[in-house]
Length: 405
Image (tube, rainbow, N blue to C red; front, side, top):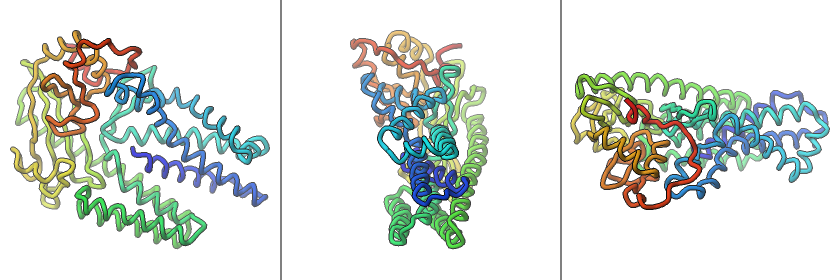
C-alpha cells in the first residue's frame, strides 16, 4: 500500500490504544503519552519500507524487485525493527524516555503499538497484487491478496476524516477534511476514478463526519467498520471475478491447466477488475490479460477507468462483461533454457508472477500493458555478459510451476 495509507493506519492504531488505556492523572504526562503512541503507530506502520535503502545492493531493476518488500517485510525481521524504533525514540526523545522508564502501562502500550504497527504494514501490503512473503525464512513463497488497489482512497477517506475529527484545532480539522474530499474529486477529473466511485467516497466521508458530530470515538469506529467492510466486499467480489474468468478460460482454452489468476482491483470500485491468466498446456504455456465487470448492466467495461485497463478494452475480443486484451503463447523449453543460461533472468524469476518475454527483455505485465516497460522490465539479453548478481535473496519463485514438470 501507499505510505499515506500506512501512516493513517498507524495513527488510528495509536489513537485507539491511547483511548483504551486508563486516563493519566497528570495532564502533561497524558499529552506526552498520546503523542508517543501516535508517533509510534505512524513510524511502525512505515518502518518496513526503509528497505528502499537496500535497493543499491543489486543492479536495477533487481535491487528494487528483490529488496523492496524483502527482509523488512517479514515477521521475523519485524523484531529488530521494533528494537531500532524504540531505541531511537529512547535516545532522541527525552519525554518518551521518561515515559518508558516510569510508566509500566505506557511502556507495554508503546511496545504493543510498535508490534501491531509492523504487523498491520505487512497485512495491508498483502491485500494487493504485488504480494509479500511474511513467513521467510520458514516459508519464502510470495502471498497475494489480489483484493484492493495499491493506492486506495477508501482508506484515506475513512481514516483521514476520523483522525481529522480528533484534531484539537478546528481550522485544521476543516483544512484536512477539505483536502481529503478534494483528492477524490481531483482523481475523478484525471480519469483515475469512476463517477460511481466518487459518489461512494463522498458518501463515506459524510458518514464519518456525521459520526464525528456524536464523538471522535464514533468517527473512529465508523471508519474502521468501513475499512473492514470494504476489504470484505472486495474479497467477495474477487471470488466472483475468479469464477467468471475460469469459465471464460474454459471456453477460450479447453483442456488447459490454470496455474494462476492475478487480479488487480480498480481503485474504490468493486465492480471493475483487470486480470492476468497463466495457463499450461501440452505445447507450452500462455499468458492472457483481460478486464472484467461484475455488473455490466451497471458499469460496463467501457465505463471502467481507461487508466487501469477499462474504456478502450471493449475494442478487443469480448463483451461488456469480460474482454481479453492480450494473448501470448510461449515455449516452456525456451523459458527453462533462459533460466539456466542467464543468471540475471534467473534472479528476476524470484519476483516475476506474470513474465512476458519480448525482444530480449522480460516484463511482469501485472504492472503495465504488454510491450510497455515498467519498473520490473529486465533487459536480460543486454545483461548476459555482465557479472552475475551476488547475494540474491532466496524468495520462492512465483512461476516455479512453469520451471518444473
